[in-house]
Image (cartoon, rainbow, N blue to C red; front, side, top):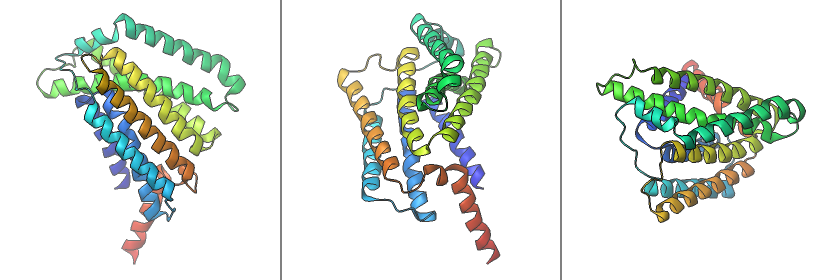
Length: 266
């Protein structure tokens, strides 16, 4: 049941990219940190300190700012339109730069500094992660259009986006796991969140032109909201008594499952 809940959560995140711009969906991922902290407080008896509570409050305030001032989703009628966005010169330059940097990190930096410099693994999974979000969003929009009656399954662009999404997801998770295995999760999580979210916002602004037609005040408000969320995230991780790896993901799921089993046996 708990595994099903995690799967449903990821599917909901995927659906969110169908209807909202990445500049809105991605920063709101910080809300999962609040949920994790609250669950750890009640189920694992990890004390949520005053500064941790303040961090949760900052995440909520920052998320509210982002929601209130985020740009609307542009109306797309086919996957070919998304392909035009993906093949525009500005995004091709971003794509080429991203691939070049990843190759340097993989071929030169990882063998030499991978075990000592945290930015090597985080840089790889953050850059690839920004491409993951772009491709996942394209696939999500293609699915939405297909459900609405305009089938996109016959377009080769749809399957290109699917293959890119699968490749990026596998690569991103691989190097994120390496970062978590090599360095303290308390350090990895906020750095990864900050870099991944920043690159995703930047990539989405280039590819989907999220800021087109937006006033300067709205853009500044969203960026300020992201900074507030980031501050809250850093505060939460810095005040936790235990390594977050022990209170999130499978560890937390296993603990809840054990509690459920004990309840059935009693």
